[in-house]
Every structure is written in structure tokens, then in C-alpha cells.
Length: 178
Image 1 (cartoon, rainbow, N blue to C red):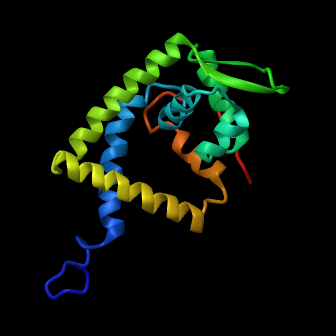
Image 2 (cartoon, rainbow, N blue to C red; image 1 turned 135 degrees about the horizontal axis):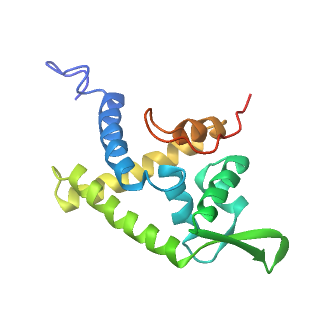
């Protein structure tokens, strides 16, 4: 559409479109997972831990693109709330596997279902086939973008995402990276 006569430079702008969708998703998703330690990032850690085979903190950090130090704090908070446990890796006793507790599995399942409703509402203008195509295309673009230009300082990104919104309770302060 861009470049065609009568095109709208804002409404045809990919960044604008992605931004509108992203902001709508984040607002709705925060209501669903905001009560978990770490909010959306804590949900991702919990979901990552709720997969087989169990993985260690390093594998989870790599999979999610989270700095290992920040991940340690997230896991500490999830563990404190009884959602995950760390246990020695039988294959490498220096390593700890992160696994969800029954409460953690329930929390992950409930949040997944609620996020499914958020996604359905957000994609309600599309048919199921279009929504599936959109997901496949976004996954393809996201993977290609990550290969070409991976983030180099994920710690700062995670720290910014974990800051509680103004007016909400604090919690433990995270280390600042300089």
C-alpha cells in the first residue's frame, strides 16, 4: 500500500501498526499476568519451566533472552511465591533444574487460558484462518529479525519491563547495569 496514490503515511506505517497492536496487547496482558512476580517476564519464565524436559537456568535464560542475573531474581521471586522449585540436575550437579510446583502449573494454565482470550479479542477482526496466517507470518518475521539483529543488552530491556507501573507496589529492587 505504501507509495500508492492516496496512501496514508501513518496508517500504512509498519511501526505504527505494530505499536498499536503491541500496546493493546500489553495493556490487556498486564491485567492477566501482572499479579505474578515479574509480571509478563515472570509468566514467560513460569511457562518455560513448565515444559519437558526440565531445563536449567542457563537454558531458560537463553531461550527467553533474559540476562542470567535478572533471571535469578525472577526465579527467586517465583520460588518465594511457591510457583517453581530448583532441584539439582542429575546430569550435572552444579546445575539447577527449574520446575513448576503444582501451584505453578495451575497458575501457568490459568494465565495461558486468559491470554488466549486476550489474543482472541485482539484478533477478533480476523477469521480463524487469517489469525493463524498472521501468527505464522509474525513468527517468521520475528525469527528472521532475531537472527539479523539480536538484542545485545537484554538486561536493560528486562529491567525496564519489570519496573512496576506508577502507583503499584514496589517489591525488591533489581540490580542496575551500567
